[in-house]
Length: 52
Image (cartoon, rainbow, N blue to C red; front, side):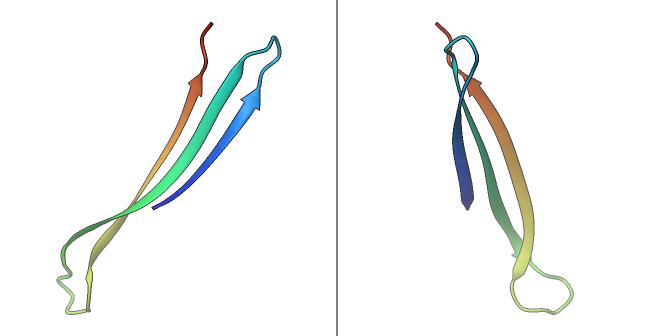
């Protein structure tokens, strides 16, 4: 898992937290006779704004 966070100061004094994360999901064994499991990347990007 890799995650990056950053905070923005908004005009008018508000704050915003943003983050992105990258996770690799490991599934069942590969069917092509190669070693390891099937890996699938999952990317999430979110924004949270502080309310008064």
